[in-house]
Length: 342
Image (cartoon, rainbow, N blue to C red; front, side, top):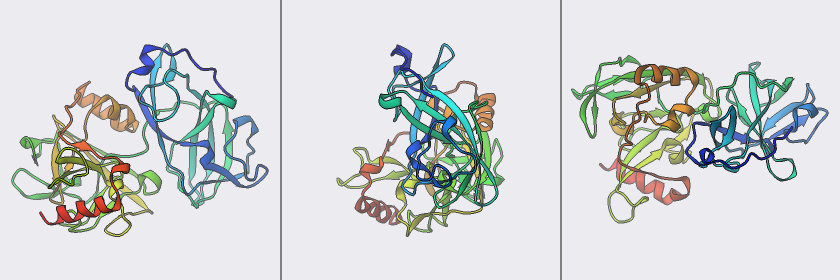
């Protein structure tokens, strides 16, 4: 099932109104069954009872979208697809995972040569080395909130520095509590979001072990949570001395690692401004309210933020975000040494 390219429109080239991170259909293959060896195909060619596996090297890509005249079009800042092309939600698949839990994914098709490309959005976390038995195929994708699977948050137990200098576990904070910020002094917490998820795939937390960045204890964050790093000297990773780096980019499988298994409670803090606060005594960001983040958050969190803040958009905290290509192992070690020596 494919869709012909939509005429390019000015709205398709603006920044996204919706966003999600999707896998390529090439990353999901049949490990046993009638279609052994096949990658994710059209829904009418799939066989219930086949077992699928997610490729070890599978990585997500951002699919950015805008809504126009009842259609979803690829936005100009999408990592995949061509701006202005129509997006087809081609169906929903239901799997039984190796742990007995159910997993659903939405099949997404983009136009292009040779029938276009096929991608999928897991509605629950998926991970390699797990068998997923296909138990349901539907051409109707149903109601789909195209949100990001990744959380922007702190794990339960993370100590947050209050305005008084005292430390308080993030789960014990309440709206109105005054927290120390780097740029605006004492600021009240306006809203706190919580989410409990299985700690697999993109949901598994990153553990930054004690003293790696000068942190007072192990700091446990979601993979896309950004930390604020001040760089000294001319040999900087970014042009500015102030840098924001996602926790996942610091993983070296030694001092910083991804902890998989079980469940994890995440807490998201929102202030009147996008703030740099202190978690386990090192600077990290609060949630930045922007069109991108609003539409890439899970539905219940996005709804809570809209009810509290309306259409408020933050001015980003100062700092250049680093990319994975910029952060070589040597640069990572330099960040560890420089931060731990503060």
